[in-house]
Image 1 (cartoon, rainbow, N blue to C red):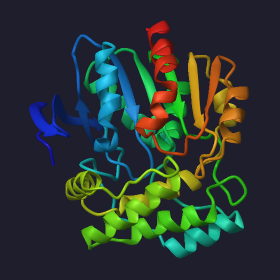
Image 2: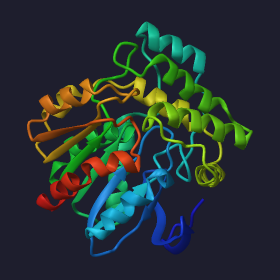
Image 3: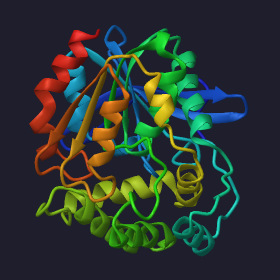
Image 4: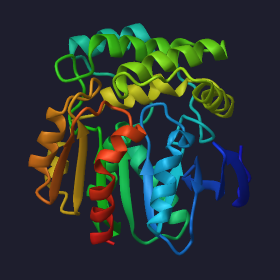
Length: 316
């Protein structure tokens, strides 16, 4: 576990040098590992990541672009992943899968609301009164709660590839994608097998035709796996998603400036979810990105980068 006090680290990644502070924020007895990229006088933007994803999965091109535009990216490991507090229950993959298809209640060890409180704890720890919020996929679900319940602390809200609905067989991911998600989470011990399963998943949900099976991707994923250890939190986080109530009424209460970004070919969360969220959040604008899947690839980001930066600057 990281030292309680922030420490300055420098690391070399893809021929670039990143400097940042790392530390631990606490939400009662839950420890949340965070990384503050700075600069300290930049406009804070809290990035909340998706299902089973560590903070290191945020792409370098996004962090650098935010910094270049005088923003201060802050990222963190959601509970139960990476270096944050991990839980020990072992949900039955088979039973939860059956409950999902039979529309039966799924019990979870914690909730989306709990995870939103973790994000707020990071801002409190860093003594940040207000910030831009960016949530992607499950991070978008978490962000919906954080934003709706703390609008006095939100400068703007950007939601990418997310939904207010509780996933079910009719509005959830395609069957093959669900299978691959579960295969990836089940690949526990063999690092190379876990990398192979990740590549297959990224090929399914990323930019069509992009080659993810590269030496750089494998090296990055190998370091990612070694940092985060096992994927035990994946099923528990999935239970938190599928066990949650839909947040449609919550979205109606949001009046913070909101930008909704969604790929038109997203196979994990269908684009109709973004359209619904736009209708619910009256202060929102919607951008449907042509040819974008579920991942924030550089190719997809280039299609909305300018409007995204304009949106952030307008509400800073």
